Image (tube, each protein chain N blue to C red):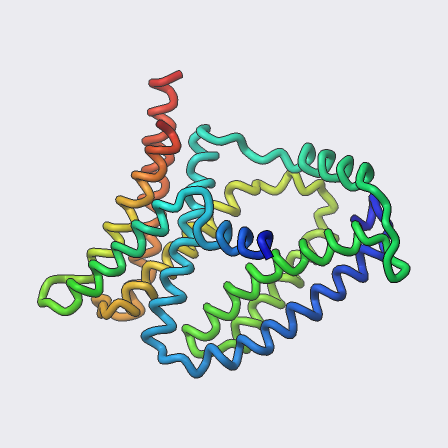
Length: 61
Length: 217
């Protein structure tokens, strides 16, 4: 059971849990902006770029 | 496992895992089709995105020199030695180590493939088409294996990981945003634009991290 849960943790979260949290926040922000007149389609790509760079910079720090 | 512990136990483990995998897919496939498409796209998109970013992150770190590129030959040697050194225990007429390692490997790796095929198929409304694509990929890989006859280490593994990471991140971004209520400008025509964005972003990050490595070296 422990190995099974470990598999799902590695599968979804992987090496850096901050990526999963960052993407969850970016999706939440996208959903909020989508209810306004602002261009919500920009939010997630920019969020992905920011989350990935922060994770990479941390790994290469 | 076949080489180190015997083919009978390895094939039995593979067969048992394939049956378990088929049962999981048969149960999950129809269940996915009754979930509302927006919720499905949000869940599938966010999972693909997080999953794809893991691949992309590792591939970028390897391509920029911040993480060692996997040496498939040494990995094979290490795993072979571990397989030969493991204790022998017979259950149900099978070498239990060979059976369980084969079962676990096929089931877990197969789950990843099943997850990608089912989510792509259900989000685009055609699971049979996605399964046909997966089967075609398996056939191509088997044919390539027979035709090329080269060692696996010649396959540029990190390039493949990079491409898979870019594709998963692209589809994850597209469907995740749609699931969160976004209407993409141009509809599905925005997908190649998102792909180009993810590709350029990833290559830019590889370049930036290479420069950072040169400065710190």
